[in-house]
Amino acid sequence: MHAEAVAEMRKALDLSPGDTNAIASLGYVYGAGDHQTEAQKVIDQLRELATRRYVSSHHVALIYAGLGENDKALRWLEKSYEERSQWLCHFKGEPRLQGLHSDPRFKDLLRRIGF
Image (cartoon, rainbow, N blue to C red; front, side):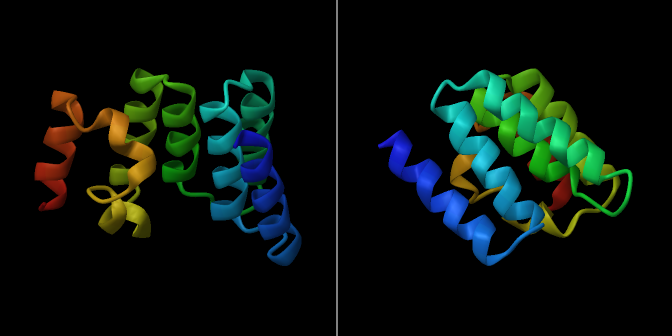
């Protein structure tokens, strides 16, 4: 139901323009739906937006997780940890990070966060 997910995320962006969580969620949907070019465009959008205001590294990590690029996702999660992102409290239960749960680096990050 990829097309429906994209449509719903676009509605979310219409309701909350500029919301980085909604932008990242759209990027995740693209990545999980094997639309690499669109997902990369969203990553680029977030990185450009980060030159003007705070964008959590967690959001970029989500998109890489959707793309199945676990090494990049984990590097961005590590950045999120270093910046003490508010999203740290969601790491353990975040379903979009499910594919990382068996990785020892993810487990170590959870330990350092305090989970």
